[in-house]
Every structure is written in C-alpha cells, then in structure tokens.
Length: 264
Image (cartoon, rainbow, N blue to C red; front, side, top):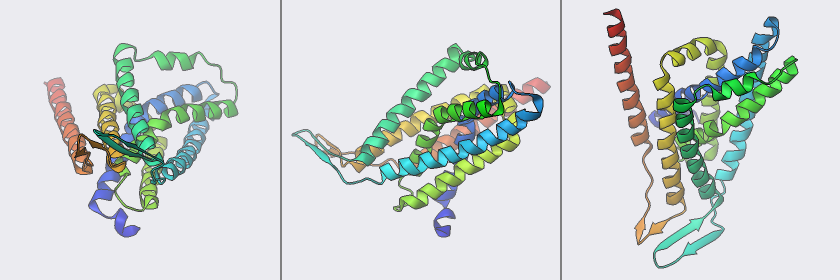
C-alpha cells in the first residue's frame, strides 16, 4: 500500500484530485457560509466545521458504494452485431453514466456561471434556518448535491491506477479528507481568491469535461467495445495530468501579467 501511494502516478493523482476537490468545493463553501450565517454568530463557526466533517464522512460512504459498483466487472449482457461488440458490465455502466453526468453538469454549471452567477445563492438565502441542527442538515443536503460530481471526478482520476480497487479507494479518501480539512481551515481565503479569479473555477469545471470524456472512453475500453473492427483503447492518465498542469501554468502566467498591469 505505502509503495503504491509513493509512486509518481499516485502522487500526481493525489495532488491533482485534491486541487480539483477544492475547486469544486468552492460553491459548496459559499452555500455552507450562507446557511451558517443565518445562525447566531457564536454558532456559525461550529455549524461550518461540524457540517464539513459530516460531509466528509458522507462522501467517504458514497466512495465505498461507488467503488463497490465499479468492482462488478463481469459482463451480464453482450451486444454483438456485424459492426459493434460490447460486453456490458456494471463497471462500464457506472463509468459511462458518470462520464455523461460530468459533461452535462460541467457544461450547465459553466453556462449558469456566465449567464446567472448568483441564482443558487439567492435561492438558498430565501430559505429559513432557525437552529444549529437545521443548518447542519441543510449543509449535508447541499454537500450531497455537490458530492456527486466530486466523487465521479475522484473515480475518473484514480480508476485503473492500481488493479486492487481498495488501493484506489484509499487514495480517493486521502484526497477528500485533505480537501475538506483545507476547506475547514482556509475557507474564507480560498473563497476570496476564487472570487477574485473566477477563471480558476471555470478552468476546474472545464477539467471535468476532460474527465467525463475519459470516463466514457474507459467504460468503452473496459467493456471491450469494438466498432467496425476497431477496439477502443484506454486514454493514459498522463495526458490528463499534462493538460491540467499546462492549463494551470498558463493561468498562472495570466495572474502575473494582471498583477504587473495593476502595479503599473
């Protein structure tokens, strides 16, 4: 286990996944802040901390469930014709549906942020919260909604790194735990930074489109899909890491240019 966690692939996956979990958690932080701010001041920090810790437990439970489904590799139905061959398994279905969901969710989120960026915040602000328990329940509901794309992203980033799914599960749990603790400790600074640089969040959502496409191709590969005699191959994770790293490097250069313009 330790040997796997110290490999370059595992470390790169952990760093990239932790970054994406934090970026994807920004909206979560905003909504949690809105829910907590409805409480008396002495309960706000408590509600945020308890809510995020319970959200972490909720995500880990969901990770166990999804990992169990992905472990069901045996095909239960085979599609065979003159031009297509597909061995359908629960693993392939979860990855394929998850990929479609990520592409849909990321494109719709990008559209909403461009066209109506404060719609969800205004909706939540209209809801009444009278007690700490109500605030925590509200935070858990919010996190459940946002955890679906987070979990599918984790699966996309780690699936296939190790033949043993339990190793990949441990890597996902570590990334989720690190991102939650970072959000607990640095929620406000992270939120202020993202608000000042909205392009970072849009970039994170754009990465989800890449991960969604990769999940779909991986589902086709693992179900031994053949189209007109051509086998669908797996996309190496290194391509994804390079795309994300290169995009972040370009964004960093944009920050430097903007900072120099402001100083000038």
